[in-house]
Length: 133
Image (cartoon, rainbow, N blue to C red; front, top):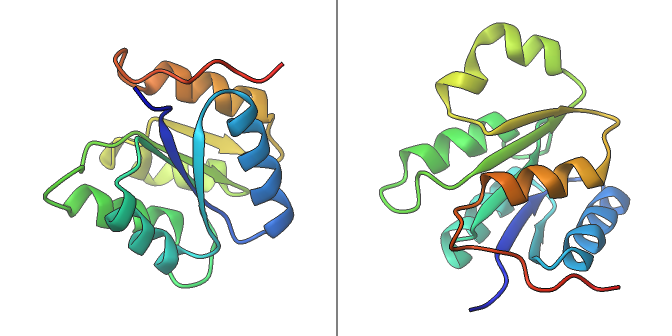
C-alpha cells in the first residue's frame, strides 16, 4: 500500500516547501499547487487522500476550493484542512461546519499539529509510510 497523498494548496512557496517537507518526513506523499485553480486541477488529476489548503490564494480561495470538491461526484468526502489568518471570521460564518472542513488552523501554526490532524482524519486503512528518522 502506498503512502497517503496530500494535496497542498499554498501560494507562499516557502511555506509550501516546509509543509511538503514535514509531511514527507512523516510518511506522506505530497503534491503542491500554488493557487486555487491549479489545486482544483491537481485534485481532479491525482485524487488525493486529503487536502491541506491556504484560504487566501489567487484564482480561488480555500473555501471555494472546498466547495468545488464537495460538489464533485467522486471523492467529495476527502478530508479538508484549511489554514488561514482569518480563523475567527470564517468560524463566525458557519462555513467550516457547512462544508465539513475537518480542521481550521490559524496562522501561524505548527506543522506537527497539521501532521497529527491528518493522521487522525484519514481512514484507518490509509496510513502514512514509516516516517524518516
